[in-house]
Length: 187
Image (cartoon, rainbow, N blue to C red; front, side, top):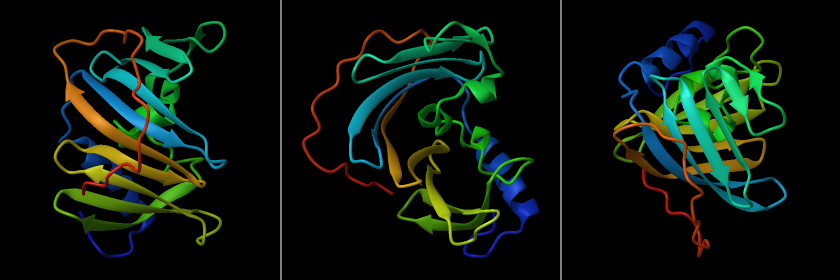
């Protein structure tokens, strides 16, 4: 992995695979927070099992959706999707190579720079293919290769907890504690 050097499009595509290869693909449960451009903040929780291509997600306010056997549930009527296309942006942080930012066909962003920050994190900067001044970032934790922080279009998503579990199961309704201050950055 090339650090602190501008990447070519080919190197950016290879980076997606480098991030995916060492990751454990068993079931996990994740919690996080999302802040929208307008300032509203909501918490979420999801369970994901890459091996079975299954996930479930719930957020504050009762929104729930899940994906099993190639079918997305919870939006309107059940709809067939590929696993990669079914992933909400928060869940895609657990499988960063599935994000639509790597410069593949019809993707608007491509990685241009990877930098080490803190003790165990990589900061990946993405640039819009038609406007190099338009950038977005992703922080990937090298301990488990899951993205912990994404800043995109003025919105921020932060993964606050990742837990390995024995087997994947659709999440029961989680309880969310009120947020009491800024979320600490641990890089």
